[in-house]
Image 1 (cartoon, rainbow, N blue to C red):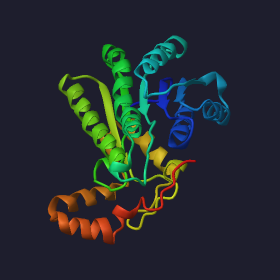
Image 2: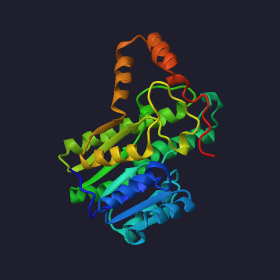
Image 3: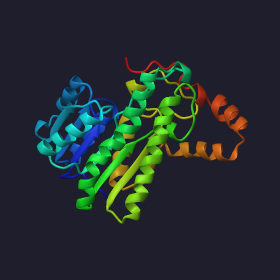
Image 4: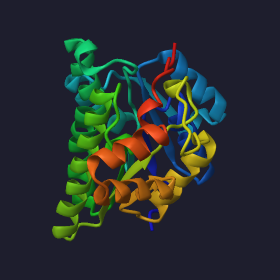
Length: 269
């Protein structure tokens, strides 16, 4: 079990969405410090105000697509808040409703930097101290899109496939080294936040942010290796494994609507 009480919890992307909710839940569980990293200073201030515990919260404006900012912000976090005990890599972006050839080079590079490279680089910063203490927890928020292909969001899908592969490989490395540092990979379906505004889903309901955040926090506390949300989404992966591709595309992709979820996507304005 991972105890949140009296721990320093760093959450990227906690200026809004499920990141903000998880920060509140960590405080409710007695976290010594909740540290918010976000690119939007107004959102950072709004989260700290919403928490109502300024002495137990800190916020830093960080563009996690920039490796130098990650290193500098981590050093500042450690100086001002203490070593990170629990890291939740939650920051993410999406440029949706575009086919691959419509994506600009800048959009591809930034999506991969924020969604895939940033969790790796920040974890690389916090991991040595965790290993030295033989204690700590890294939670990487991937996506159900990291388990199934989806048109009109191919770069986002690629970034989340990368997170799942890296995160679970890291878990195995730490286990093989007999370390007590834990890694939890989370793959939620679309969540009802501004990030996925306009998404429509016929087969699986859009997820409630509060319930999803609570499931992620419980997964951390229980040292879950992998948590798909909802659990039933794993059945789609099973279907993908046993059905011919043409059948899967027809039944799951088109009839169930998975391949059309992004048709009316607008995202956060």
